[in-house]
Amino acid sequence: MFSKYLFGCFCIIFLIINSASTNPLGSYVPINDKDLIFSFLPSTMKLQRYEDSLYYFGTIFKGNFFQSMQFCKYHGMDLVSIDNKEENNFIYDFLSGFLSSGDYLFWSSGVKTEPDNHWVWMGTGKPMTYINWLPGQPGNTANERYMEIRYVNGNRGMVFNDQIAGQANHVICEISVPRAVGL
Ligand SMILES: [Ca+2]
Image (tube, rainbow, N blue to C red):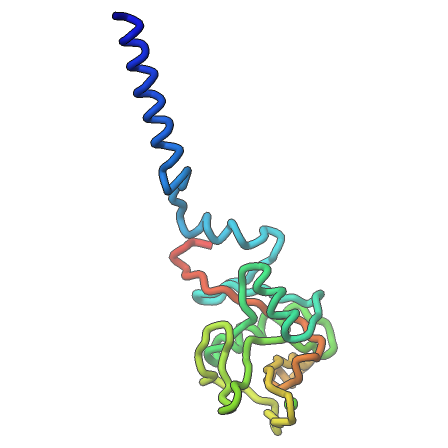
C-alpha cells in the first residue's frame, strides 16, 4: 500500500517537472523596459540625453557610411536623425562643449532615395523636414546620396552636406528611449 502511494507521488512529481520543461515559454521572465535597454547598450558607452532620445558621439571611430551604420547598429542604435532646429542645436552645443579647434565630419542617417531623390532619415524612416544645408549644398554631385554633418570650429557652426558613401567620417548614434523609462 505504502509503495503504491510512493509510486503515485513519483509519477505526479515527474509529470509536474516534465510539463514545466516543455512549457513553450521556457524560463521566460518578464523584464521591464529599463532592463531590456541595458541588456543591449554597452555600459561603457557614454550616452547623452535630449528629449526622448539617447545619443552617442563617436569622435574616435571613423568609417564610411555603411561601416558607420553598422557601428551604431552593433550597439543597438541608429545613425542620428535630426528632426528639428532644437535637436540640431542640442547636438551643436554638445559638440562645441568638448571638441578642440578643427573641423569634424559625422555621418547621419540622412540618405537620398532612388530614383525619386527625396531626402529621408533612415533611422526613423521619416522624410527630412528640418534641413540645415551648407550654403551651396546639396551639390547633387553623382553618388553624393548620404548626408554628413559638418561641425566647423568657431562661429561657423554646424551644417549638412551631401557626400559619397566612401568618405571616412565620425559617427553620431541615436536611440529613441522615452523619458518614462528613467534612463
Ligand atoms: Ca556635397
